[in-house]
Image (cartoon, rainbow, N blue to C red):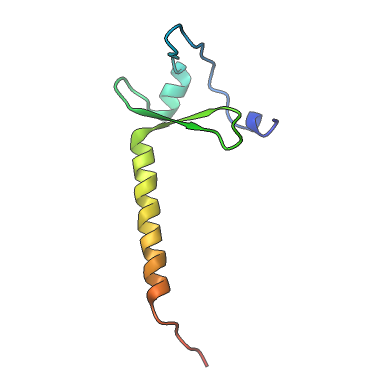
Length: 84
C-alpha cells in the first residue's frame, strides 16, 4: 500500500447522506476543477480506490490514443524496407 502514498496528498472528503463528496479546494485548484466541470470516476487498477478525472482530459487521452493507434496501423501496413 505504500505505493499509494507516494502521490501528493491534496486533502480529504467525507461522503454525505446522498453519496456526494466535496473535492478539497487544493485539489480543485491544482487540477483546474471548476463549477460545472464533468468528472469521470474510474476504479483504481488494484481495486483499492477510485480515480477522478475531468471528462475533457479523458476525451483528449482517448483521442490521442486513437491517433497513435492509427499511426501504428498505417506503419504496419507499409511494406518493409529491405536493407543490404
